[in-house]
Amino acid sequence: MKRKISSLVMATAVLSGSVFTPVAVTNVSAATIQQQQSAQKETIIVNGQEKVISFTQVNKKKLYSIDQLSQIMVATVKYNSKTKAYEVSKKSGKQVKKIDYKANAADVVINGKKTKLSTPTKMVGKTLFVEADSFVKTFGGDLLIDKSLLITVAGTINLAEKSLTVDGNDKKVKGLSINGKQLYSVQDIAKLFSATTTVNKNNEVLVTNKDKTIKLKLSNKAMTVNNKVINLKENPILVKNVVYADVSDLVHAFNGDILPTQNSYFVSTTGLVSGDTFKPQWVDNSSILVTNETETESRSMVVNTSSKKGLFTVNATELAVSPNGKQAIYSDENGYVYLVDLVTKKINGINLSDDSVKLEFVWSPDGQKVYFLQGDKSEKVSYINVVDGSIKKVFEDKLIYKTDLRLSMDGKKVLYIVAKEGITKNTEGENPEVDSIDLTDTEEQIYVVNLEDAEPKAIPVTITKENKVFPSFLADGSIVYVSADPESDKLPDVKMISVDQSVSTLISNKDINNLVVTSKGEVMILVRESNGNSVIYEWNNATKKLKNIVQTKLELTSFSVSNDGKSIVATTPGTNGETLVLFKNGVMELLTK
Image 1 (cartoon, helix red, strand yellow):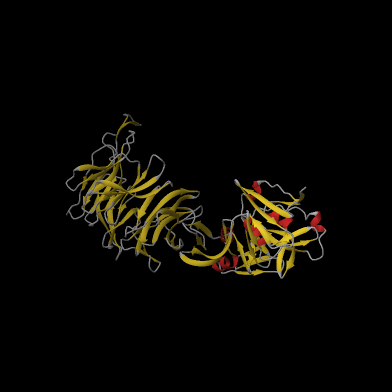
Image 2 (cartoon, helix red, strand yellow):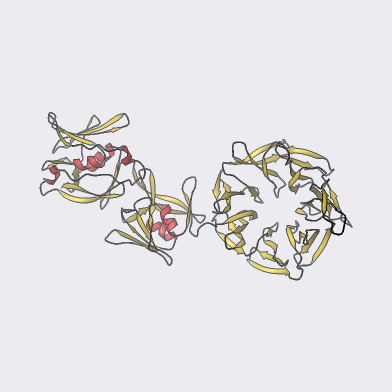
């Protein structure tokens, strides 16, 4: 007859979820309570939880209660009176893992294979004590021997340095891999935020810097940050005098931000720029100027794409960056014009006398002039000399509310879009009222002005009725734009107006959300595909084909290409408005939140 020592059936749910899901260990059995004096008790860590277990020592090697080890590893132990063996088994999938022990013996059978233990088993009273290493590993767990025994019931335990990208720089920090989860050194993460870490005798961890006081307790999922209690994802663990915890819990405690990367994490110690962030313009190949709006302010910021930090803030919007990226220009609510030195971070007013409305600044290729739409109704095209601040009118006519001002790459022509006003007919009498408005031929058209003409004139280069958006010059003086018919189900086209005024269709049947001509003269479009993906294509004029440059499940709304053509930033809807993402290493990486 077999004498059953211990049998415990536990739901597999105990092993699911967090790496540190508490393991239910029942009270020490009656047999264990009746042990001799040579059995002692110690606290060990099981899946991040403190547990008390009985042990004895043989030649300075600790052996542990087979009953309690079986409970920890969700295994069943039985005594076979015929073979005088203690049979421990656990079903794993379709397999059954098994160990046969004998009392006070080094011989053992593990999964049917005879072997020897490094330390023989030992009977203490009516309980068998065995070494933990082979026991835990046979049943799918792992352990690490430190001041206290650290056990994971599934997976492995590994101590190794890990890499983090911190504010754009690579950093090495100590890491603890346990049961498929990765924990990081609290001491190392604290140093990133100029904080110090101490551990007292009560297993309390104190992390402090000038702004934060963070308290953690080993094997406890509660953390206090400046006296506010926050629940942790995982229990902190002390191994070889290093405290390990979930890295996102630590970073957020310091008001930083953490983003997953392909192989690790990006940590922003100051936190990402937040708010509605849009209209990205490249300053150089590693920084961009954006418009950023929050509930309390509207401003422009230079953001570094590597560190993700805001480098410089201007309390104004609608800035335009110069071709060399060293300056930006804007007009305030009074119509005064300011020049921003993006290198020295200084702002100077270059015209504080002309208070007319000035919109849509466009720099000349040589950076000496900036063209803009002038007047309450944007009726004029003018430019300002950035050296002396003088303003000169280039062209004016009766067509009002001009938009989409663009300058050719050689600086010799400008284009804009404008519509003619409808003809209003009034009723007769002393108090005439509007009778009708004739909107015939009032559709918006693209006009071009040759700046080298003695008397510049606006020449319409389109006469069609469809909407025309995103007009831009190509290097040879041709014009491209997106043509969309609002009264048709037909998808938009990209059309080109050659220098000889002939019109052709470059791209058709695409749901185009944005068109950009890069500094190198390449035509790129942002398309929303039928499967919901956003795709950025580049048009190859030689092959007459589109090349897929970026594909993402994100809903992109606009994009901008760096001057070297190697980087792309885009905007996408977020919780606080538009957020900025960077296309890097084949994936979209968040820049703002």
